[in-house]
Image (cartoon, rainbow, N blue to C red):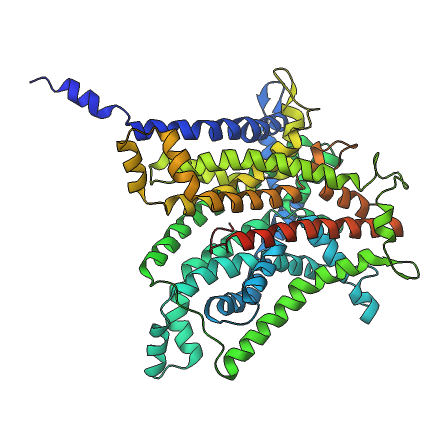
Length: 559
C-alpha cells in the first residue's frame, strides 16, 4: 500500500491555517517595516564602524559607572513606584469589586482617565501641584519637583487604574463564602483575607505589578518634566545620548539593554496572564456587589475615596486652576495666548497643535484598528509557538524605547525606496505602533467570546472566511471595535517619545507643544503649557467617558 500520498496530504496546511497566515501577513509587514527595521537600523548604525561590529563598545558602556547609576535608578524607581501603586490601589480594587455605592460607574471611568493621559500632561499636573509656584509651595512653602517623591507619586497616579482593573476583575469573581468560612472557623478579618483571598489573587496582583513595573521602567515624559537633571531612566538617557550628545553607539547599547529587560518582563507577564486566565476559569461567576456593611467597610470606602480625591483628582484640578491663573487673578488669558505666535516658541500658533493632533490621532486610529483587529482575529484561536511569539511581539512597542523608534524613523526612512522622512504620515505611523497592543488586548476577549459554531455554520453554508468575518464576527464585535478605536485614539493623542523626533516644527502635536512650552522660561509659556495640557486632558477624558457609555470595559481589556 502506498502511504506516501496520504502522508503528504496530512501535512498540507488546512484552510483555517492558511486563513490565519493571511490575517497575520499585514500586521507582520507593518511591524517589520515600521518597528523592526527602524530599531535594527539605528542599533546597527551605532554598533557598526567601518563595516565591523564594535562589541567592545557595548562592554564599555554597560560597565561604565554612569550607565550603572542610570540602570540602578531605573530599576529602583520602578520597584518603588510599583510598591507605592499597589499599596494605594489594592484597596480601590477591593472597593470596586465588592462594594456598591452611588456614582460607582462614573468613578470607575474617572480613575481610568489618568492611564490614558499623555505623560507630559501627568508631568505638567504634578508640576502645577508640587513645583515652583505650585499649590504646595503656595500653601506651605514646600517644593517637591526635581525630587524622587514627585516621580513616584506621578507614577502611582498614572498606574492606579492598572491595579484596579486587573486585580479588581479577579477579585469580583472570587467566591466570598470561602473567606466567610474561614471567619466562622475563628480567623480574624485580616487573617482570613491573608490566608484565603490573597493566595487566590496572587496571579492578578503579579500581573498588575509587572505591568506597572514595565510602564515605570520605561518612563520618559514624566521623568523629563519632574526629574530635572538629577534623575534619568534608561529612556531619558537614550534621549540625551541621541538628541543632545549625538552619541549613537552609547544610545544603541542602552536601547538593547532596555529591550532585553522589557522582553524578559513581557515573557514573565505572558506566563502570569495564562495563570490568571486559569484562575478566572476556576472561580465562580461574578458576584453582585453589596452596600458597605459595618464601620470597617464604610471606613475602607472612605479611605479609597480620599486616595482618589488626593492622588487622582487634585492634580487635575490644580492643572485646570493654573491654566486659568493670570496676573491679577483668573481669566482666559492663557487660552487666548494660544492663538498667537508671540514668544517665538513655534512657527505656528500653539492652538493649531490641537487640530494637528486630532488629525494625527484619527489617522493613527484607523491604522491601529486595522492592524490590531487583523492580529486579534489571527490570535483568537489557540495556536502554536509561532503565533504566541507574534502575540508577544505585539507588546514590544510598549516597552521598547520610543526615542529609539522615533530616531530610527529619521535614520532608516530617509532614502529610496523608503524616503519617507518628510512625509506627514510618519507621525501617525509611530503613534499607531503604540496603539496596536491596546487594540489587540481589547479585541481578543471580544472575538474569543463569539461562539465558534456560528462561524462553522457560515462555512457549511458556503461563506468564505472574509464573508464569515463580515457577516458573523463584525456585527457581534462592533461595540468592542468602537472601544478599541477609542483607546487607540486616546493613546495616539498622547504619544510623545517618538513624536518628539519626527513632528515637524510647523506641525507639532499637543504633547510636543506642551513639552516645548515647559522647557522655556517665562510666565506666559508656563500658562500656555497649562492651558494646552488642560485641553489635552479634557480630550482624553471625554474620549474615555464616551467609551464607558458605550460599554463598561471588563477588567483586563485596558492592557
